Image 1 (cartoon, rainbow, N blue to C red):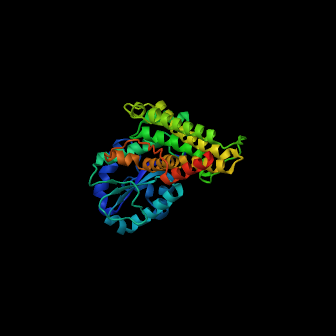
Image 2 (image 1 turned 90 degrees about the vertical axis):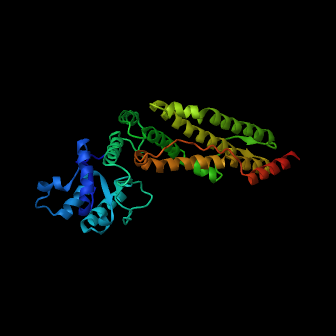
Image 3 (image 1 turned 135 degrees about the horizontal axis):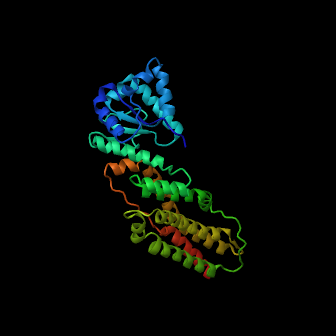
Length: 344
């Protein structure tokens, strides 16, 4: 992971300097290395400042604090900084620009979905602490896109930035589901390699056994894996990294168990066409839960990108896992009709 000369650089319009400087000074008090123009007079002396700013924002700072305002949008020098920072953010494909609103002016190229802080709502100290928390995540050598290693887990647990428990959980879940992405896609293609099992009869008994197996998977998940007690033991104060990792792994394992249940159906060969039809309909019982678990992982990934800002703003956050072990009524009707044909 790249190291930088400065932790942050504020990007702002000259008219907003009186609002920006208290944050800069508070950050310095907290040990944050800030690139601030008034402190760089000698370093900037005689340089081509256009090239110098590009070099600084592109290679020397970890985050840019963008102070968004009507002055910022109209200020030519701020426009140059903004475009440079946004180009760097596009290249990095992760959080690099940390917006701080001074008013409600929209900044060109800054998506409304990007998490932000607001100087009208958050104090100087709250914003400064949020920057410190963001940097703590970096020092933990952890992102939701990086492999989970024992070193990363230990570092994250030691730094303990706001929301570290959820960042750890999200990382474990995302990495686990990433390994299963191929199987997940194949499920909805209704494909699996042959598993060597051949059903010569009606398949009625095999279908019944599979219903029992799926019900047991559901029961274990509902009663043991995703209970409030299990979540409280992992996420509740003071937070247990080992339990959080284990809980994330159980999420992935449950997802994989459901995939494997359906995959076994698709991988079986059926001598009777009606048995094959009924079995294939049964495999689709897994669809809604797989989609729901996959979606919650993607949503958690989006939340992780703005978690520090949201927690700093006082927004409550709870970890919930949707368990929608339900079957579409139309699919269930088709399945029952197929079973009826088998029993005749």
